[in-house]
Image (cartoon, rainbow, N blue to C red; front, side, top):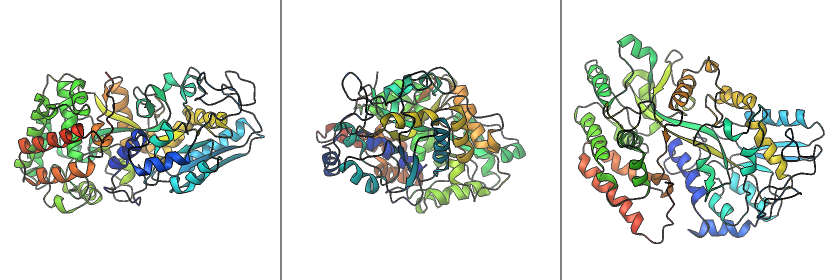
Amino acid sequence: MDDPKDPIMLDTPAEKLGASRRLFLGLAGVGTGAAALSACAAGGGGGGGDEGEDGSGVGTGEGDVSDDNPFGVSGDAKVDVVIFNGGYGDQYAKDAGEKYQEMYPDADVQVSSTVNIQPDLQPRFIGGNPPDLFDNSGAQSMNSGALVGEGSVAEIDQLVEATSLDGGTIKDSLIPGSLAPGTYSGKLYALNYVYTVYAVWFSRKQFEEKGWTPPVTWDDVMTIGEAAKGEDIALFPWGGQNASNYYRELALSMAIKEGGVEVQKNLDRLEPDAFEQDSVVSAYAAIEDAVAAGYFLSGGAGIKHTEAQAQWVTGKAVMYPSGSWIENEQKGITPEDYEMVGVPTPQLSSSGAMPPETIHGTAGEPFFVPSDAANGAGGLEFLRIMLSKEQAQNFSEITSSPTVLKDTIPEGAFGSTALASTNEMITAAGENTFHISHRDWYGLGPDTVTLWTEFLSGALTADQAREREQAMIDAVREDDSIEKFDVPE
């Protein structure tokens, strides 16, 4: 989750996460911003030693390569790390810096932070003195596609093949699918450090008091909605000004769990009949049923997500679909005894193609090693330290958010019910994960908000909403000026 003060159009964590992915995939040349940045950033292979076979990886340092020092870090070399100081803060990185100092006592370890990544770092790329590692997040992040396209950031496949501080390889210690967002044309350029689970969130205390069972199917959700309505409580709040499309994510996730991952691939491929798939039709009809039943809190069209979420945690609504950043975002508003927990996206039926424990999850907060880094090996080593259980647990304790490292959340989850719940969902899902990309790839966030605000207001039927969504992706598919992205088989 990025800083809520960031001036991004929709100003929601979901949109910012998508924007980071979109910037990564936006190749140089798709717009003047990308071209201008790519002209500033020329790459070479940093690190001072041997590079990969094609010269695009991070070179080894001047130290001796071993399992304990897989990148050949020179013990007295300076390492320069820049962190985005947004919603996660920078303390976790400072703590990783202290560990680096402990491992390399003679090193000059510099960990700085900013909310203005591009304004602060672009001049350094131009001048040929970029940092050794940087966290490319926030509204002022650099155009990652331009950096990748011009070779200004290095491939970092050797990072995940390296030995972890905890033993075994780093790759084997990661949550399944967490490398995908940073992989371009089969090569890893970014290590996304934070893992997000999209779920339906509620108060465990309220459910226990009301005698409600956490929902597994959409029928369960509707049953709770009817019970809540009888007590003058809405089932769902919604922020129509900027986040009505949180319910789009819910609908499409239900459709994918019902019809299988091919549903997601057809959507991301912008197929001509993507919104006519049976499970998509059923999912949109399900949302329409909830609207018709009066289960959505009135007045949502005129408020933002933060106001809707405040309505939810203060008892005006029962459940809310969101990413696992939600507890951290609501700190200071949520009652201390709320006991926020989540469940995976509900099943549309008992015969869905994917099991109930399947989650929509993805990794964010991308870290890059510049090709011209003076100590690229040190940048990789800093990431290796961050990917230790000790540092991953420290991050989660500070932020109430999981990293991409498996099995690092202790039983008590540092007192966070939401973090414990998130960890349980990740563990139960195993390999049963998926991610929906087309909205973020093609910048459809604002248009989908407009459409879904009309839909949730009752101004559109489910069929009309799907027809307009299909027209939206048809326009992208037929526009040759828009770079299209490959969908893995």
